[in-house]
Length: 85
Image 1 (cartoon, rainbow, N blue to C red):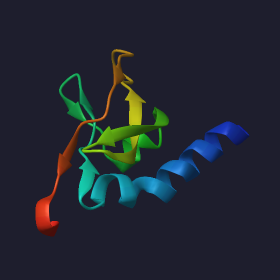
Image 2 (image 1 turned 45 degrees about the horizontal axis):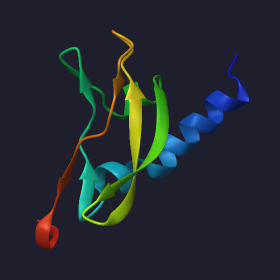
Image 3 (image 1 turned 30 degrees about the vertical axis):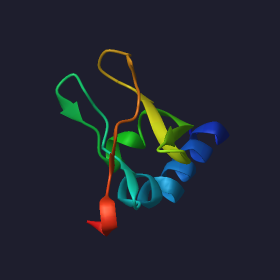
């Protein structure tokens, strides 16, 4: 049975996924650890925390995840898209 906290976490991920991973001009790269890249399906099963990161003077929301294999906290990595490219 799902707990309310689990449902809220999944809804937060689903609601913010496009903004975080497909946003412009700053977008987070999909998290990687233990030789694996974690897509939306895996993120919904993982421990994920929303954090705010300062990128070139702007505050940007990103996800910090805990690797389900080794338990390490995986900080966000991002790319900056210039001119929407």
